[in-house]
Image 1 (tube, rainbow over the protein chains, first blue to last red):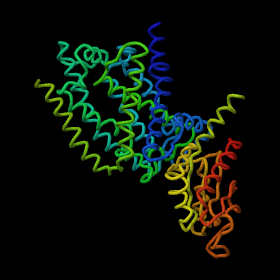
Image 2 (spheres, helix red, strand yellow):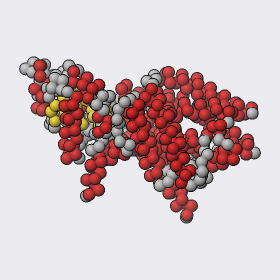
Image 3 (cartoon, helix red, strand yellow):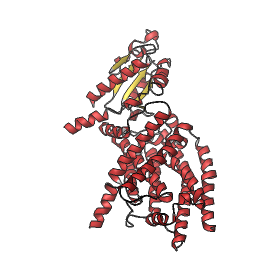
Length: 319
Length: 145
């Protein structure tokens, strides 16, 4: 019974649910504010994404007459939010929280990470809008491109941990974190550097920011899959993307840099690391480059990140 | 009830803008897009954000004298914007037709067809005037919410 209560609070309060949501919104706000500063503007308040959410709660949800299925149209964002809530509870915070094996392991997290992309594809095609359909096809192409490197990166980390721990492969996030706490972080292990590089390319694409925001490009396809959403339904998508930011960045920290003191200090270190990852990997990139075309992005991911990830896997197997 | 009114106060910090070009000469659109609204005077401080989709909009900025050619499209687009919304007419054209008034191809004034909440006259209006207009629109929006 108490186990179920712990699981529930991990999904709904900490580190998933409320905590992840508020922190994800703050990350997005910091991103917008720092982007504004880099462009010589003042920028919005830090909690602007939270204000946006409250506002969306007061708006009316409209269902377009062209929609294929109202249930799918309104159900898609719910599926996305729930998957990200569970994923957020799966991400370990070193020294503070390690996920219950009951909830799942790294493989479950990999599958859950694919859900938001699929939800966007379903939402775009269910809306019946031609822009949604274009967003759908672009999202699918981009997912095909970036999922490959991610799987290889995860495999490299899992193999490296598994072999040093005495079995072949380890998909337990708790074990990966514990291994690095004993043997040093993978970030400082030259064998793992190609995997780190591949992950650095992967996460902007997964978060859908500028060089890779091709499926939702406002100036081309008017936010693609999100075009027909309004009010609370759009708010659910915003919640999903805020949670996803926490999950993806948290996964990066767990895979490569989970060194921190325990307790409150450990949590503070984790929060700062997340913020640095967001500002360096997302904000600075976003304000410095333009958007790629979908064919360019596809070719880019099949060239460099895939090469790095494959090289990393090969080195791990050989060494 | 108190919590609801507090939340409404928070909600008005996030007005999303949507531009409709009703056959304008683009003068006002340039003022909106490049001068008043994003880089130089930075209305993002007020929480404003341009959105690509009419379904996300809160404050609608209409420019142009509403030419006969685009009238139906503009009216339909306006219907697509979810309530509560505030309509702002930017430039003198939507108010009276401006230099195009009495033309056979122009349907101005625009308030024959849509309830206009704020008028920002000028040809084109100064960025400061546009920002003041948006600030007024936010006040009206707060009451409608």
